[in-house]
Length: 369
Ligand SMILES: [Zn+2]
Image (cartoon, rainbow, N blue to C red; front, side, top):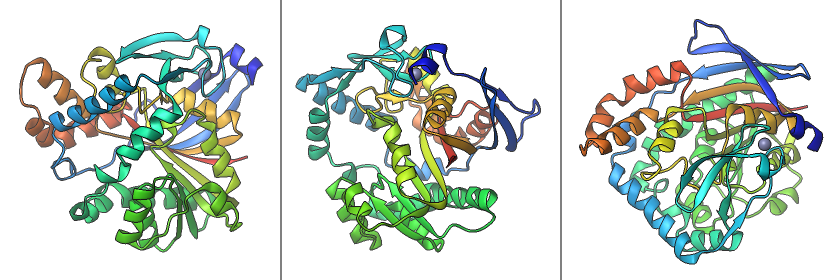
Protein backbone atom coordinates (compact mmCIF):
# COMPACT_ATOMS: atom_id res chain seq x y z
CA UNK A 1 0.00 0.00 0.00
CA UNK A 2 2.85 2.40 0.87
CA UNK A 3 4.47 2.17 -2.58
CA UNK A 4 1.15 2.76 -4.32
CA UNK A 5 0.39 5.74 -2.07
CA UNK A 6 3.77 7.26 -2.89
CA UNK A 7 3.11 6.95 -6.60
CA UNK A 8 -0.43 8.28 -6.24
CA UNK A 9 -3.79 6.99 -7.42
CA UNK A 10 -4.58 8.51 -10.77
CA UNK A 11 -8.19 7.73 -11.71
CA UNK A 12 -9.45 8.59 -15.20
CA UNK A 13 -13.19 8.79 -15.86
CA UNK A 14 -14.44 8.22 -19.40
CA UNK A 15 -18.06 9.25 -19.91
CA UNK A 16 -20.34 10.23 -22.83
CA UNK A 17 -20.10 13.96 -23.56
CA UNK A 18 -23.86 14.09 -24.07
CA UNK A 19 -24.73 13.12 -20.52
CA UNK A 20 -27.98 11.42 -19.56
CA UNK A 21 -29.73 10.34 -16.37
CA UNK A 22 -28.37 6.83 -16.80
CA UNK A 23 -25.13 6.03 -18.59
CA UNK A 24 -22.09 3.78 -18.42
CA UNK A 25 -18.75 5.28 -17.44
CA UNK A 26 -15.34 3.66 -17.47
CA UNK A 27 -13.18 4.30 -14.39
CA UNK A 28 -9.51 3.50 -14.99
CA UNK A 29 -6.62 3.54 -12.56
CA UNK A 30 -3.42 4.69 -14.30
CA UNK A 31 -0.74 3.60 -14.91
CA UNK A 32 -1.96 0.17 -13.76
CA UNK A 33 -4.66 0.21 -16.45
CA UNK A 34 -7.27 -1.37 -14.14
CA UNK A 35 -10.70 -0.52 -15.60
CA UNK A 36 -14.26 -0.79 -14.34
CA UNK A 37 -17.51 -0.29 -16.25
CA UNK A 38 -19.75 1.64 -13.86
CA UNK A 39 -23.45 2.22 -14.50
CA UNK A 40 -24.23 5.72 -13.33
CA UNK A 41 -27.60 7.17 -12.29
CA UNK A 42 -27.98 10.93 -11.89
CA UNK A 43 -30.71 12.55 -9.78
CA UNK A 44 -33.42 11.44 -7.41
CA UNK A 45 -36.84 13.05 -6.93
CA UNK A 46 -37.39 14.44 -3.42
CA UNK A 47 -40.32 16.31 -1.92
CA UNK A 48 -38.08 18.71 -0.06
CA UNK A 49 -40.75 20.95 1.45
CA UNK A 50 -42.24 17.90 3.18
CA UNK A 51 -38.97 16.26 4.20
CA UNK A 52 -37.56 19.50 5.63
CA UNK A 53 -40.81 20.89 7.01
CA UNK A 54 -39.46 20.83 10.57
CA UNK A 55 -35.88 21.73 9.67
CA UNK A 56 -35.32 25.38 8.80
CA UNK A 57 -31.80 26.56 7.95
CA UNK A 58 -31.70 28.29 11.35
CA UNK A 59 -32.48 25.06 13.21
CA UNK A 60 -29.80 23.16 11.25
CA UNK A 61 -27.22 25.87 11.98
CA UNK A 62 -28.11 25.84 15.69
CA UNK A 63 -27.78 22.05 15.85
CA UNK A 64 -24.30 22.22 14.29
CA UNK A 65 -23.35 25.07 16.59
CA UNK A 66 -24.32 23.15 19.73
CA UNK A 67 -22.23 20.20 18.53
CA UNK A 68 -19.27 22.54 17.95
CA UNK A 69 -19.64 24.06 21.43
CA UNK A 70 -19.75 20.64 23.08
CA UNK A 71 -16.48 19.45 21.53
CA UNK A 72 -14.67 22.78 21.82
CA UNK A 73 -15.53 23.00 25.53
CA UNK A 74 -14.41 19.41 26.09
CA UNK A 75 -11.19 20.12 24.17
CA UNK A 76 -10.41 16.45 23.64
CA UNK A 77 -8.93 16.06 20.15
CA UNK A 78 -6.40 13.90 18.37
CA UNK A 79 -4.55 14.02 15.06
CA UNK A 80 -4.58 11.99 11.90
CA UNK A 81 -0.96 11.28 10.98
CA UNK A 82 -1.75 9.69 7.63
CA UNK A 83 -4.57 9.53 5.08
CA UNK A 84 -7.39 7.28 6.39
CA UNK A 85 -7.82 5.82 2.88
CA UNK A 86 -4.37 5.28 1.33
CA UNK A 87 -2.10 5.87 4.39
CA UNK A 88 -0.01 8.51 2.58
CA UNK A 89 1.81 10.70 5.08
CA UNK A 90 -0.09 13.70 6.49
CA UNK A 91 2.96 15.89 5.70
CA UNK A 92 2.18 15.51 1.99
CA UNK A 93 -1.47 16.62 2.35
CA UNK A 94 -2.59 20.10 1.34
CA UNK A 95 -4.75 22.35 3.60
CA UNK A 96 -8.08 23.17 1.95
CA UNK A 97 -10.31 24.92 4.47
CA UNK A 98 -10.33 25.65 8.20
CA UNK A 99 -13.70 25.00 9.86
CA UNK A 100 -13.96 25.47 13.64
CA UNK A 101 -10.69 24.22 15.19
CA UNK A 102 -9.97 21.74 12.42
CA UNK A 103 -8.60 22.10 8.94
CA UNK A 104 -9.64 19.77 6.15
CA UNK A 105 -6.58 18.56 4.22
CA UNK A 106 -6.57 16.95 0.80
CA UNK A 107 -4.41 13.84 0.39
CA UNK A 108 -1.99 14.42 -2.48
CA UNK A 109 -1.99 10.72 -3.29
CA UNK A 110 -5.69 9.72 -3.46
CA UNK A 111 -7.51 13.12 -3.21
CA UNK A 112 -9.27 12.18 0.01
CA UNK A 113 -10.32 15.04 2.28
CA UNK A 114 -9.76 14.59 6.02
CA UNK A 115 -9.35 16.72 9.12
CA UNK A 116 -6.11 17.33 10.96
CA UNK A 117 -7.90 17.41 14.34
CA UNK A 118 -10.75 15.07 15.24
CA UNK A 119 -12.55 14.45 18.53
CA UNK A 120 -11.17 11.49 20.47
CA UNK A 121 -13.19 8.26 20.57
CA UNK A 122 -13.93 9.02 24.24
CA UNK A 123 -15.27 12.50 23.40
CA UNK A 124 -17.44 11.05 20.63
CA UNK A 125 -18.98 8.40 22.88
CA UNK A 126 -19.63 11.03 25.52
CA UNK A 127 -21.40 13.20 22.94
CA UNK A 128 -23.50 10.38 21.48
CA UNK A 129 -24.50 9.06 24.89
CA UNK A 130 -25.90 12.52 25.71
CA UNK A 131 -27.31 13.13 22.23
CA UNK A 132 -28.49 9.78 20.90
CA UNK A 133 -28.81 9.78 17.12
CA UNK A 134 -32.29 8.51 17.68
CA UNK A 135 -33.97 11.63 19.00
CA UNK A 136 -33.60 14.13 16.20
CA UNK A 137 -34.01 14.04 12.46
CA UNK A 138 -34.68 10.41 11.75
CA UNK A 139 -37.10 9.25 14.40
CA UNK A 140 -40.16 11.44 14.33
CA UNK A 141 -43.07 9.01 14.47
CA UNK A 142 -45.41 11.03 12.27
CA UNK A 143 -42.76 11.15 9.54
CA UNK A 144 -42.19 7.41 9.18
CA UNK A 145 -44.24 6.99 5.99
CA UNK A 146 -42.90 10.20 4.49
CA UNK A 147 -39.26 9.29 5.10
CA UNK A 148 -39.70 5.76 3.81
CA UNK A 149 -41.46 6.97 0.67
CA UNK A 150 -39.11 9.86 -0.11
CA UNK A 151 -35.74 8.54 1.08
CA UNK A 152 -35.43 4.87 1.93
CA UNK A 153 -37.66 2.93 -0.44
CA UNK A 154 -36.00 4.49 -3.55
CA UNK A 155 -32.60 3.43 -2.16
CA UNK A 156 -33.83 -0.10 -1.49
CA UNK A 157 -35.25 -0.35 -5.03
CA UNK A 158 -32.00 0.96 -6.51
CA UNK A 159 -29.88 -1.54 -4.56
CA UNK A 160 -32.16 -4.42 -5.64
CA UNK A 161 -31.97 -3.31 -9.28
CA UNK A 162 -28.14 -3.11 -9.13
CA UNK A 163 -28.05 -6.62 -7.68
CA UNK A 164 -30.29 -7.93 -10.48
CA UNK A 165 -28.03 -6.36 -13.11
CA UNK A 166 -24.93 -7.95 -11.58
CA UNK A 167 -26.28 -11.42 -10.75
CA UNK A 168 -29.41 -11.83 -12.90
CA UNK A 169 -31.62 -12.68 -9.95
CA UNK A 170 -33.30 -10.95 -7.01
CA UNK A 171 -31.42 -10.62 -3.72
CA UNK A 172 -32.93 -12.59 -0.85
CA UNK A 173 -31.38 -10.87 2.16
CA UNK A 174 -29.89 -7.59 3.32
CA UNK A 175 -27.63 -6.53 6.17
CA UNK A 176 -27.39 -2.82 7.03
CA UNK A 177 -24.23 -1.75 8.90
CA UNK A 178 -25.02 1.16 11.24
CA UNK A 179 -28.73 0.66 10.68
CA UNK A 180 -29.76 3.66 12.80
CA UNK A 181 -33.51 3.82 13.25
CA UNK A 182 -34.14 1.04 10.71
CA UNK A 183 -36.15 2.86 8.00
CA UNK A 184 -34.03 1.33 5.24
CA UNK A 185 -34.44 -2.19 6.61
CA UNK A 186 -38.17 -1.68 6.94
CA UNK A 187 -38.26 -0.66 3.24
CA UNK A 188 -36.29 -3.80 2.29
CA UNK A 189 -38.52 -5.98 4.43
CA UNK A 190 -41.60 -4.53 2.71
CA UNK A 191 -39.99 -5.46 -0.63
CA UNK A 192 -39.63 -9.08 0.46
CA UNK A 193 -36.02 -9.25 1.67
CA UNK A 194 -34.93 -10.88 4.93
CA UNK A 195 -33.62 -7.81 6.75
CA UNK A 196 -30.93 -7.69 9.43
CA UNK A 197 -28.95 -4.79 10.91
CA UNK A 198 -26.16 -3.85 13.29
CA UNK A 199 -26.51 -0.71 15.42
CA UNK A 200 -24.46 0.17 18.48
CA UNK A 201 -26.76 2.95 19.69
CA UNK A 202 -29.24 1.55 22.18
CA UNK A 203 -31.86 4.29 21.69
CA UNK A 204 -31.97 3.65 17.93
CA UNK A 205 -32.25 -0.10 18.44
CA UNK A 206 -35.18 0.32 20.82
CA UNK A 207 -36.92 2.75 18.46
CA UNK A 208 -36.49 0.38 15.51
CA UNK A 209 -37.91 -2.53 17.49
CA UNK A 210 -40.90 -0.48 18.66
CA UNK A 211 -41.65 1.14 15.28
CA UNK A 212 -40.87 -1.66 12.83
CA UNK A 213 -40.63 -4.84 14.89
CA UNK A 214 -37.07 -5.34 13.63
CA UNK A 215 -34.52 -6.43 16.24
CA UNK A 216 -31.08 -5.04 15.44
CA UNK A 217 -27.82 -6.67 16.52
CA UNK A 218 -25.75 -4.81 19.11
CA UNK A 219 -22.40 -5.71 17.58
CA UNK A 220 -20.70 -7.39 14.65
CA UNK A 221 -19.56 -10.14 16.99
CA UNK A 222 -23.14 -10.89 18.00
CA UNK A 223 -24.14 -11.24 14.35
CA UNK A 224 -20.98 -13.15 13.44
CA UNK A 225 -21.89 -15.87 15.92
CA UNK A 226 -25.04 -16.65 13.93
CA UNK A 227 -22.90 -17.42 10.85
CA UNK A 228 -25.41 -15.63 8.61
CA UNK A 229 -24.36 -14.21 5.22
CA UNK A 230 -26.19 -11.66 3.06
CA UNK A 231 -26.80 -10.89 -0.61
CA UNK A 232 -26.80 -7.13 -0.01
CA UNK A 233 -24.57 -5.54 2.62
CA UNK A 234 -25.31 -1.83 2.92
CA UNK A 235 -24.17 1.20 4.88
CA UNK A 236 -25.69 4.67 4.65
CA UNK A 237 -23.82 7.80 5.76
CA UNK A 238 -21.64 6.03 8.31
CA UNK A 239 -18.24 5.68 6.63
CA UNK A 240 -17.40 9.40 6.81
CA UNK A 241 -17.52 9.20 10.63
CA UNK A 242 -15.00 6.37 10.95
CA UNK A 243 -11.31 6.70 11.78
CA UNK A 244 -10.69 3.55 9.71
CA UNK A 245 -13.17 3.72 6.79
CA UNK A 246 -11.81 0.45 5.38
CA UNK A 247 -13.51 -1.35 8.28
CA UNK A 248 -16.84 -0.97 6.47
CA UNK A 249 -15.50 -2.89 3.49
CA UNK A 250 -13.96 -5.52 5.75
CA UNK A 251 -17.40 -6.07 7.28
CA UNK A 252 -19.03 -6.10 3.84
CA UNK A 253 -16.69 -8.97 2.95
CA UNK A 254 -17.12 -10.70 6.30
CA UNK A 255 -20.91 -10.96 5.96
CA UNK A 256 -21.12 -11.44 2.18
CA UNK A 257 -22.96 -14.41 0.72
CA UNK A 258 -21.39 -16.17 -2.26
CA UNK A 259 -23.11 -13.69 -4.59
CA UNK A 260 -23.12 -10.45 -2.67
CA UNK A 261 -23.15 -6.75 -3.53
CA UNK A 262 -22.05 -3.96 -1.18
CA UNK A 263 -23.85 -0.62 -1.27
CA UNK A 264 -22.38 2.43 0.49
CA UNK A 265 -23.66 6.02 0.72
CA UNK A 266 -21.57 9.01 1.72
CA UNK A 267 -21.34 12.79 1.16
CA UNK A 268 -19.37 13.74 -1.94
CA UNK A 269 -16.54 16.26 -2.11
CA UNK A 270 -16.87 16.95 -5.86
CA UNK A 271 -20.08 18.92 -5.31
CA UNK A 272 -21.64 22.37 -5.23
CA UNK A 273 -22.39 22.00 -1.50
CA UNK A 274 -18.75 21.39 -0.55
CA UNK A 275 -17.56 24.14 -2.89
CA UNK A 276 -19.91 26.61 -1.15
CA UNK A 277 -18.95 25.42 2.33
CA UNK A 278 -15.29 26.01 1.47
CA UNK A 279 -16.15 29.57 0.42
CA UNK A 280 -18.36 30.24 3.47
CA UNK A 281 -16.78 28.17 6.29
CA UNK A 282 -18.38 30.27 9.02
CA UNK A 283 -21.84 28.89 8.12
CA UNK A 284 -21.81 25.13 8.44
CA UNK A 285 -25.00 23.08 8.80
CA UNK A 286 -23.79 19.63 7.75
CA UNK A 287 -21.56 17.92 5.16
CA UNK A 288 -18.21 19.56 6.02
CA UNK A 289 -18.64 19.57 9.78
CA UNK A 290 -15.26 18.39 11.01
CA UNK A 291 -16.25 16.98 14.41
CA UNK A 292 -18.72 14.55 12.82
CA UNK A 293 -17.61 14.09 9.21
CA UNK A 294 -13.93 13.63 9.93
CA UNK A 295 -13.46 12.91 6.24
CA UNK A 296 -15.20 13.59 2.96
CA UNK A 297 -14.79 11.23 0.02
CA UNK A 298 -13.99 12.46 -3.45
CA UNK A 299 -14.86 10.23 -6.41
CA UNK A 300 -11.16 9.37 -6.65
CA UNK A 301 -10.67 8.56 -2.97
CA UNK A 302 -13.73 6.31 -2.87
CA UNK A 303 -12.50 4.47 -5.96
CA UNK A 304 -9.10 4.16 -4.25
CA UNK A 305 -10.64 2.75 -1.07
CA UNK A 306 -12.46 0.10 -3.11
CA UNK A 307 -9.28 -0.73 -5.05
CA UNK A 308 -7.16 -1.10 -1.91
CA UNK A 309 -9.72 -3.42 -0.33
CA UNK A 310 -10.17 -5.44 -3.52
CA UNK A 311 -13.68 -4.35 -4.43
CA UNK A 312 -14.86 -3.53 -7.94
CA UNK A 313 -17.41 -0.69 -8.41
CA UNK A 314 -20.41 -1.68 -10.55
CA UNK A 315 -22.90 1.18 -10.06
CA UNK A 316 -22.92 4.78 -8.83
CA UNK A 317 -25.85 7.05 -8.00
CA UNK A 318 -25.34 10.78 -7.64
CA UNK A 319 -28.02 13.04 -6.14
CA UNK A 320 -28.33 15.47 -3.26
CA UNK A 321 -29.45 18.79 -1.84
CA UNK A 322 -26.95 21.26 -3.32
CA UNK A 323 -29.78 23.53 -4.47
CA UNK A 324 -30.67 24.05 -0.83
CA UNK A 325 -27.09 25.02 -0.01
CA UNK A 326 -27.10 27.60 -2.81
CA UNK A 327 -30.23 29.27 -1.40
CA UNK A 328 -28.91 29.08 2.14
CA UNK A 329 -25.47 30.58 1.45
CA UNK A 330 -26.58 33.23 -1.03
CA UNK A 331 -29.62 34.07 1.11
CA UNK A 332 -27.34 34.52 4.12
CA UNK A 333 -25.05 36.83 2.15
CA UNK A 334 -28.08 38.96 1.25
CA UNK A 335 -29.56 38.72 4.77
CA UNK A 336 -32.65 37.20 3.17
CA UNK A 337 -34.99 34.52 4.49
CA UNK A 338 -34.13 31.61 2.17
CA UNK A 339 -36.15 28.62 3.42
CA UNK A 340 -39.21 29.29 1.30
CA UNK A 341 -37.32 30.03 -1.91
CA UNK A 342 -35.26 26.89 -1.44
CA UNK A 343 -38.34 24.72 -1.02
CA UNK A 344 -40.10 26.32 -4.01
CA UNK A 345 -37.18 25.97 -6.42
CA UNK A 346 -35.40 22.91 -5.12
CA UNK A 347 -36.59 20.26 -7.53
CA UNK A 348 -35.80 22.04 -10.81
CA UNK A 349 -32.43 23.38 -9.72
CA UNK A 350 -31.27 20.14 -8.10
CA UNK A 351 -32.24 18.20 -11.22
CA UNK A 352 -29.91 20.39 -13.29
CA UNK A 353 -27.06 20.06 -10.77
CA UNK A 354 -27.43 16.27 -10.76
CA UNK A 355 -27.29 16.17 -14.57
CA UNK A 356 -24.13 18.30 -14.47
CA UNK A 357 -22.54 15.75 -12.14
CA UNK A 358 -22.05 18.08 -9.17
CA UNK A 359 -24.33 16.44 -6.58
CA UNK A 360 -23.38 16.26 -2.91
CA UNK A 361 -24.23 12.61 -2.17
CA UNK A 362 -23.17 9.36 -3.79
CA UNK A 363 -24.13 5.73 -3.39
CA UNK A 364 -21.67 3.24 -4.80
CA UNK A 365 -22.39 -0.44 -5.39
CA UNK A 366 -19.36 -2.70 -5.46
CA UNK A 367 -18.50 -6.37 -5.62
CA UNK A 368 -15.68 -8.07 -3.74
CA UNK A 369 -13.11 -9.59 -6.09
ZN1 LIG B 1 -4.94 9.22 0.50
